[in-house]
Image 1 (cartoon, helix red, strand yellow):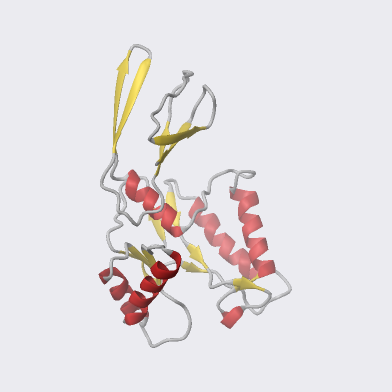
Image 2 (tube, helix red, strand yellow):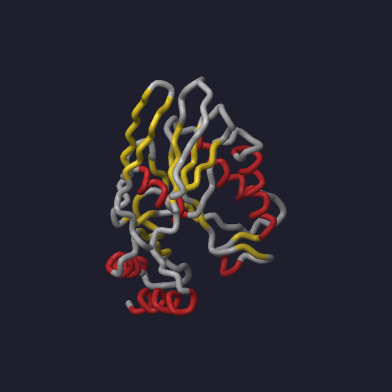
Length: 232
């Protein structure tokens, strides 16, 4: 299937950007047409494929996640012919309500073909539906709600979990000073995200010193629950 390789080459030539994750295109096609896309994408070096079938769309992430040649299903969110209420969107939101109740942290995936004034090809979300869907999620589970959902693109989550599962962290304490050493794996060149977060469980106040090779953000000047490390 030349479409996969031609798209990769065209994007590299015109945008100087190397794709690393592949999304199976929607629309009409032969039965199980997605299988050829999946096969070609993985054979041409893509790290994962977002498709119509596969593992997921809900993954437990409190332990190591098998990301090798991942082919993942996703929940397809789209508008219905009902334009007078949000019954269809409420059905999708109810599904998320059930997922959020998981006792362990999970990664789950929703997607739609597009948003606009109409339901393009009956595969998309009308803007009022999209607005209602996103605002409801933000109000209930965002920073102004119970702050239990972190929303990010597929690639960012994949690469965060990949790095999290492979770094080695070592601690050394001398009197009141603690030295944290993070040993990194060999990170693929086509990764776009190289961020690490550390959960801190202490009632003690402290300040942070770091090298110039990385950027550190934290959630407080002296009292911390989390430290965010962005590798350069």
